[in-house]
Length: 425
Image 1 (cartoon, helix red, strand yellow):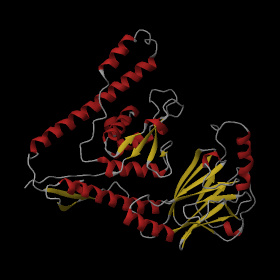
Image 2 (image 1 turned 180 degrees about the vertical axis):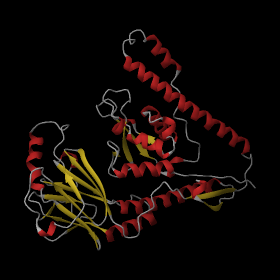
Image 3 (image 1 turned 60 degrees about the horizontal axis):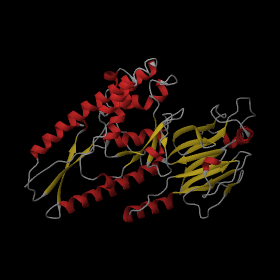
Image 4 (image 1 turned 90 degrees about the vertical axis):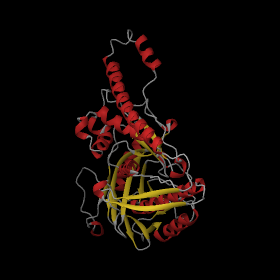
């Protein structure tokens, strides 16, 4: 009887999802509403406008997470190489070149979170390899014409350093693969897996039962201008002018966490839309209050500007208007979410949505593109997303176990659950 071990930490995937959802890294955002793809900033460290603390923040964070911060000396190129190689080697990520933008002032790449059912059982392809020799030959033939460009020489040196790091990683992986091949039996009459449940201290524990949270992302004309993660049951989205304002009315004097609507950034193109945006902002001064209580998440409008909303549990395509100083409107139903989550667990299919959208000053229906609106607040509920990810992980595990069972000669597998203490991980 043969015995093998399969060990999966999923540390990179869980770390990436946590960082994208946190909203604290500029340019690191979800690329689709279903949150299956994300953008990662990809500005070259040799660019004159490269900002080490912003453009290289996510790469430096990964190096620190892996304990490589001191080894790399904080060098942006080395930090970027480590995360690039980790993403390209992992079967849990797949680059989507058609959605990336590398020829703009703020370039980015797009990666897809590959479901476990698509990853298969084969070893991951080595995507981080040396550049072909013919490319180096082409560079040699062009060296005379580019000799006066120090920036290009810097870029070539950085690429060579990246290739060297990737080549070293590939060599280690190849040695491990060869060693595993020598230990693999030729004939198997039973497939046995030791499933390790690892306790990673570096990953934040799940929120306590009933703990509410909001992730608010504000967009002006389709561009994200603000974002904040709120832990608690209340949050207020409001415009805070720089000039002195009258005292806040009594119902709003409580210390609710605030997400301020900022002044229009300079990167927005000048024109009629920008003028309309600047005119609309003062009407948002008293804002909208969001509260999670009872059976759902409710919104109440205090500002003079009109507010429309769309959500997964609205009964009609809209538009849905939030009246001023009226009774709170349910924007997200917890009961409906629990029912959809149970159906997802039993039947699979599309996971429940965990967000809703607020539109300030303009009507918004489900069929319209929020990117065309002046002010949009996209509100996600991390507590709900955590439950959806837990169920999705369970379904993926069941799928992979079914695949393993179908490949076993006996049509069955034996599982040995082994709890690994944090000190070993």
